Figure 1: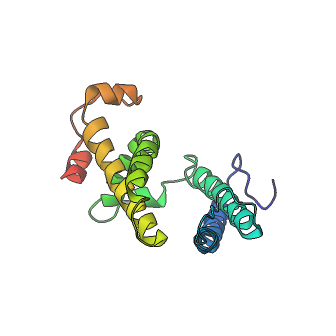
Figure 2 (figure 1 turned 45 degrees about the vertical axis):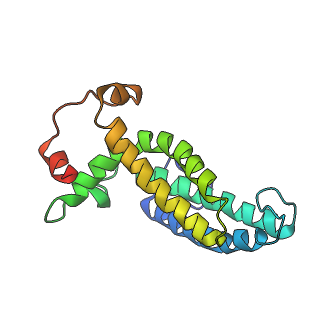
Length: 178
């Protein structure tokens, strides 16, 4: 791999460039998906038109960039991550600790929730942008709520997700939960 984007040897600046490049590719590809899917009977995920193939390629490239960025930016051998640095009220560290613990459960839970929400939304007679935004917002809210209420607070589900046994909330977690 060239350009400093090797996940095995992350360079923080290269990972930040990969994240920005991934965002740019995503922002270029999203309107393409909307245009390619706007024609009746068109499916940008399976059509063999130049536009559909192009936007799928952009999405693949954006996904690769984000993968490299995430792996590099979460490398623990670096100093304290920016998100974990203490703000005057300590929110950054608490939020980072909460999300670090939640990573696997959120990843596992999001797929069925996204599918369930999308199943209910795709039949709406609304513009595709509205449907997309509703699916994203509702899925995010439901996934975080499911993690916080169903996984994080019960001993059985914590065990099933490979999390440590539930102990009394630490002071920092108590303040974040309130």
